[in-house]
Image (cartoon, rainbow, N blue to C red; front, top):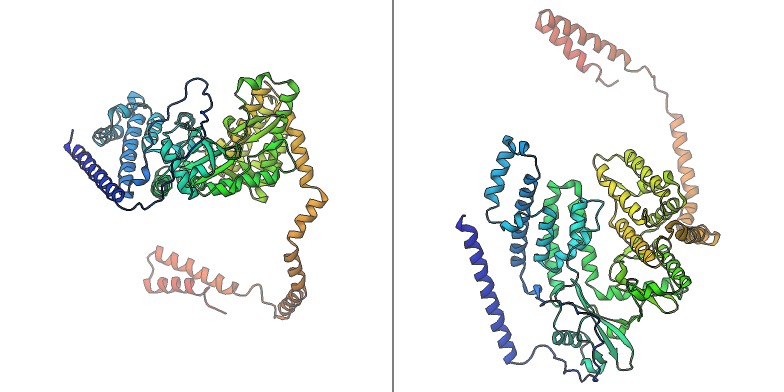
Amino acid sequence: MSPFPQMLHFEICALYILGTLAGLVKHYLKGSGRRTMQEPRPARFAAVPDPPKPGVEPAYGKFVNTGRQGPLRRFLATNRHLYGLLFGGLAAYLRGLPKWKRRQPRFLLLRLFSFFGGLPVNRKLKKLPFPVQLRLRLEALGPTYIKLGQVLCLREDLLPNSITTELQNLLDRLPAVPYAEFLELVGTYLDRPVDEIFAHIRSTPLGSASIGQVHLATLLDGQQVILKVVKPGIRDTLKTDTTLLRMFGGVLQLFLGRYQPRRVIREFCDYTLREADLAREADNAETFAANFSHQPDIVFPRVYREYSTENLLCMEYLDGIKPTDPKARVLRDDDRERLVDLGAEAIICMLFRDGFFHADLHPANVLILPGPRVGFIDLGMVGRFDTDLKRTLLYYYYCLVAGDAENAAHYLTVMADPGPGANPRAFRRDVEDVCRQWSHHARFGEYSLGRLILASVSRGGRYRMYFPVEMVLMAKAIITFEAVGNMLLPGFDVAAVSKKHVARVTLQRFAPLRLAQESLTALPELIDALAKTPRLVTEGLQLVEQATQRPSENPFAGLRATLFGGACLVAGAILAGFGGPWPIWALLLLIGIFLPLRRK
């Protein structure tokens, strides 16, 4: 093995050690002098023990602040893993070829290139299938890339099934910030001691994700709340990583254009940067609450604005059970039917009425509350549909539940963005066949409506028909509704439950008052057009008058010159072919070329 990779690795390690020592010295010098940041006093919490933990509490591991890494170090680490993924993937590709094909000359050269280029790559990783290599390297790169993998596993419309299935195994319980540091962060973000606001903060996190960490807390008035904090350094890491990812997306686009890597990475960067701003999540929660203010059985947590910032979110704790809880299965039949109906109403209204929906929906983000009522939490990631897309989606979904495969395929094709070499007609026929198959098996146990939408969208890649990421997020929301509904009512009829809510939203969409309100939005443009009508009519009549007063042109003008020029070309070509005098045939050819171009 060449010593160069080892030397490079040694130099990088040396730089890392020197940087760490410099950081420790800097921290010590700061600590010995005047403190630059206000440290909150230790909270004099009431002696309230943590809630009992059923079973064994999962270990979160030690949190590492990647925000302290500079752009150069992140660039080197990312390039090292990208290099390893490139040659590891090439090795996996060559292993998958038949033996007779690997012996061909071009593949022999490729094997030599893979062997020598893959010498610095970890041998154990290189022997694994490519999807497993991708997952492990995303995990090694840290929270940003784990989040990228979690988003990529949704893009079944662009990526092969083997990759999306493997990426679903990415970690979802990441290392947590220590409790003492968490208290310090809360006090710093609120700019006041935590014991002036909270009577107790649970020491064990309720959850630790790639961006935020959540703890249960109690206000001084006894109200239980949720505290969500952006982990330290995450925002700096996201900015650095997204810049690097956009660069890599541009490079990958040159080689893997079929899978649209630049588009996928751009969507991921936009969504992730928005999710790191907890003020946006607070806005989302209040928007959802306003949209469903007339539906009291669909609940969203109240936000405590006075205790919230862009890095800290304090919101109401919804005391309910998850659909996976065994207690949900022993509810009365009418309560379970009511919950499924509420879930269908919530999802359909989010998607097709409001065009503003929960984009990170899974069973852990849905709660069953007393009543029964349905609650939604973790509202940082949302999807939006504009008016035209929302209308077309409503028509598409209505045709699906009504069993109209032809029109469903038509509306889905309208929403697609054709790429180079697209085949919309073949895509439409394929989607029609899939929809007809589903219409005969519309029960969850046999065929899922969300899976139908996802399967239809995933076929777009074959025909170079691409969809916005919101389409995949919508399919994920519907799949979650179906999964939760099947937990409560095994084998429930998706189409029957959805149909009445879709019909109600459709009727509201075409209600005379609604149409009149939409018409009024275009009223200023209509008034402007009416004001300009007399002038436009006058100018149009003047143009018509000028056109009628022009002398008519002879339709055969120029025909004589064209015929004569053609005759000269033929005569010149004949003379040149039979060896006639070159001055004569050259002159005839010149006359034949330039005579038709002469202006009359």
